[in-house]
Amino acid sequence: MPSDDRRLQARRKPRQVRAELTRERILTAAAHVFAEHGYAAGTTNRIAERAGISIGSLYQYFPNKDAILAELLVRHIDRGRWTSADQLDLSPGTLEALVRALVRDAIDNHRDDPQLLRIMIEQAPVSRDLLDTIDRHGKMRVGQVRDLLARHPDVGVRDLDTAAELIVFTVETNTHRAMADPRTTGMEALENELVAMVTRYLRGDRPAPGGQADVR
Amino acid sequence: MPSDDRRLQARRKPRQVRAELTRERILTAAAHVFAEHGYAAGTTNRIAERAGISIGSLYQYFPNKDAILAELLVRHIDRGRWTSADQLDLSPGTLEALVRALVRDAIDNHRDDPQLLRIMIEQAPVSRDLLDTIDRHGKMRVGQVRDLLARHPDVGVRDLDTAAELIVFTVETNTHRAMADPRTTGMEALENELVAMVTRYLRGDRPAPGGQADVR
DNA sequence: GTCTATACAAAGATAGAC
DNA sequence: GTCTATCTTTGTATAGAC
Image (cartoon, chains in turn cyan, orange, red, green):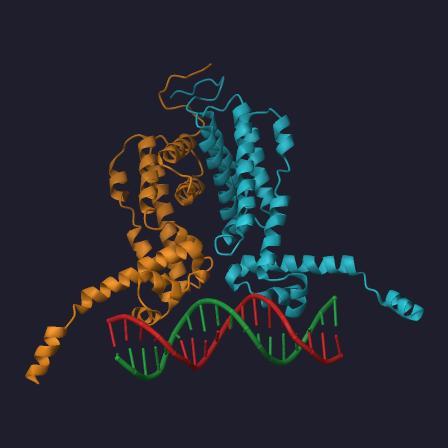
């Protein structure tokens, strides 16, 4: 018995950490495979292959394919909290600076899979529960922006709710498009135009506050 | 023989029209099924069921599932030619009027399936050929808008190419979002905000031309 | 022309050896 | 813990009766 214990001890692999590592590799592989092939064509076999393990091993870490996507989604949501939310709140700079921060934030958040996942939930069987979570998260972001707009003195639009939705969606989706487009060389051009569009929109019909009129 | 002919004549069903009608029903059903379930989960069985025919009959009208999507796509492209392209070109009204026409056009074109199809091609095995056609079509629309912008005196942005892409995509995608959102009651709010955003963007940093400065 | 029944293929998931 | 081999399910597509 004691000898048995010792053998077990000696042979024991670092279960927790190594298992966790394998889980990560599977998730990373899945993210890439889903991104490349879509959810349906992103088969578990392909995921296992890319992760460098067998299909059998994969199923030791996840009960089924949907669970992999679900995990991917919740992580994305958790990670997606606004890195700059507080920062933005505290810096009462120009309206343009605020907008630029929003755009930059969107670009940054798109580094490791943007709304690729948003597209995915349209074709994947996501649980009602998870869908609600995603929805809540989206609404939260819109709400944050709405509040930001409400507080800024230079904002001149009336319908803040519609404006916030419009802005969040437009910035996010345009960022995604540009990143997905192989022709895109740099993000500067888009960032500038996006900032310009949103800023001028938010200022309202009035010219720049305090600006000297450039009548021609 | 003559009697045979008469019987055939008497029994002859209106093949052309009826067959064409069935084809339409299949396509309509497919559009709805794809929209609801996505391409992968939008099975031929479901399509047949929704069309009110059997799976066997479906395959008498289309050689395979992909062909159904392909037909759907080409029709969308054909139908999608700008109804108002000439009209827009000929009416040198205000910039806002031009933008509003663009937005209205997008809304109208979204009645019977917008870029639901665009999303679909990301998960469906579309032929390279068809993909190119779609791409050409998109570029054409962007080019049209670019030219329209170039000609209008009130447009004050420098990077017309980026601006045209940004506008076309933003208008199209926001329209789609609003229509897909069950909370949406009417399209007026979005239309107005969209028009406001794009118009102010296009005017550039200058105040409205000839406008008296509203300095506060 | 339309149906039912079924062949065939592909992908998800499991069993059991090592 | 990981693998290979295999079962099961599901969806596309066809065959043949009516």
